[in-house]
Image 1 (spheres, rainbow, N blue to C red):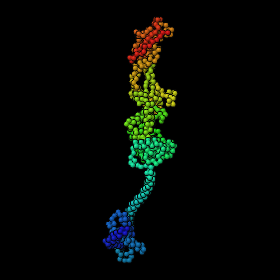
Image 2: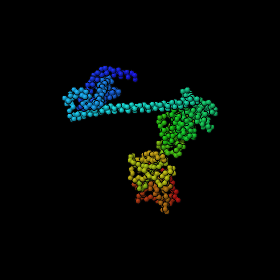
Image 3: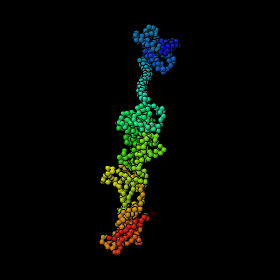
Amino acid sequence: MSEIATGTTSLLRASLSRTGKWAGSVAFLSGAVSDVLNPLGPFAAYIALVAAVAAAIIAIAMVLRLVLAAKAMPALIFATSAAAIAGGVYGVQQETNSQNGVIAALVPAVAELQQSLGIVSVKVAKIEKTVTETQKTVEAVKKSTDTVAQKTDQIAETQKQQTAQGAETQKTVEAVKQTTDTLAAGQQQQQAQAEKLQATTEQIAASIDTIAKGFAQLAAQGGAIADPKRPDEFYHNARVYELAGDMLNARRAYLAFAGFDVDAIDPYTRFATLLRVQDGKAGAREVFGQLAGKAKAPAIKLVHLLQFGDAQRLDKLNAFISANSDYAPAYFLLAQEFSEDRLGSQTLADKRSEAEALTKFVSYEKDGGLLKYFVDQTQLADWLDRSRTRLAALGDVLDPSRFVPTLTPTRSNAGWSMTISLPEPATAISWRLGDSGPFTDTGLMAMNDQRTGKPMPNPSFELPDSTVATTIGIKYLDIRGRETGPFDIRFDPDSALQQGNKQILDQFWTSWIAFDASGNHGLVYFTQMLSFRCAIKEVRYSLNGTALDKEIKMPPCDAKDPYAIPADYQPYFKVKDDVKSMAVQVTYTDGTKSPVREYKRQ
């Protein structure tokens, strides 16, 4: 501050020495002239006002550093001098009430000069004009003053905002520092506790195999370790405490084991089970959430996501497998999501998903690929045994040619009745004729399906007798509402008619031949074979033996009316009384032959 004051004083002295003399002279001269011209108007007051305003503007500009002080100082001195002298003259005029000026009152010659020049008698209009122009000048000066004042206010407001922001930033910094200090103190406390229980992973440098061997040895010895230091010792103690019902110490031992960040699945699944029993699923999720936030072991993160609800858990499990596609234990845990134990009742899709996951898990057993994920080898043996048992129960569920819908066409005189057989319970069935187009729902029946507890979908639909060979698409919704299919099934009306007739003939072969039917002695009827002749290529028979030396000639198949017997055809033939039996063999249109059937005459 002292240096600034010294510099300002030096600048003022230098400016007065250069400017003071001529500025004072000019200001004095202007004051004298204004006094002489006073009859025309208060010019001294005008000059004083204008000079004062100018001095104020220059001073403000210098303070705000809008102009250089060295350049503005002469103008400031001149404006100040003019304002002082003119103001003094105006003050004396008011004090003495001199209308024609102070000089004219003291010097008669000046008064005569005023009269000779006509200054005193100037018209009022000229005076008003001068006053008007002066007023405009004053307004202009005032406007400039307002502008400078407004800019000054803006600068002050900006400085105020910056000051407020600085204060707020300071508060935030202090709060962050306080939080950081608190966290640091907590971390130091946790570190101190951890150092008492365990060393770091780098210090231990123990593999899963080493830990597993140590655990097996400790398990054979039995009893808790008094002063555990290694991860296998903490895991051993956790199991001992857990089996003894000491859940508090078991929990502490599991937490100590987790601190080593060992990537083994079985300690964490067992710990999670203990937590769910004690704290519920939410409590287990919270504990493992904290562990997963600090750990690097995938096993901890995997067990953490298992503590979520059903839908969320499955999504997280699939995401984990996508990111860790070779992490074998994840496939066993994925299989459990589709198991009968978890779901109660399984759809075909559930069974396939379970079988695929278990097959993938078991595939890692080759060359000991699963050993590295387990500390307790008995747990691995249990997982493998359960996997093999379930795969055996699921059978060939992964065979793509199995467990697909089938169609059973049945021909009537009106057309085709198509019956759908599904490999599992369904809540809706739809079909489509051809390879494209919309599907048609078969609708629901007026009864509930005991397997689903819902209305049973209609398993059949009708087609006209004019239907040509085509593809029929079938799809359905399983009990979980998941769409399965479509399955494309080939439909050939001619082949379907033949196969349907053959099935009936084979099933009801005892009705092929009827001796002496309805009291018609001596007649042999073959009406059933005639009705289903569309499946028959040839009928050979023999009487009283199996020579099959005779043939029954069948009329051709009428695909439009397959079961009708032509009016000009007799469905029987005559035999003598000595005929006691008849042997028959049918050759079908597909080339197969029936067994030789023998019929006794009663």
